[in-house]
Image 1 (spheres, rainbow, N blue to C red):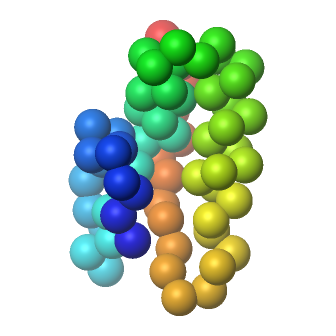
Image 2: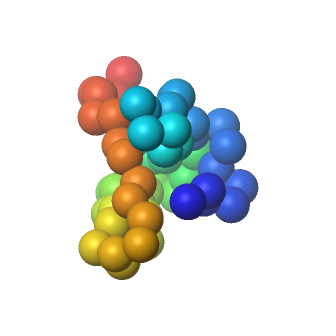
Length: 67
């Protein structure tokens, strides 16, 4: 699964060659587009993390902390 427009949030690939997206990078990406931190968290949690239980794919997140 590739998230369109979020290439700058890719932090690597795992042992199964699945893309790994950085959670904080996802937040920063959306904050750069004008969202507040709270809006970015809500958006990423619902619209990105919400994709996880879809079955045929999985998205892996590297959790780190905001600077």
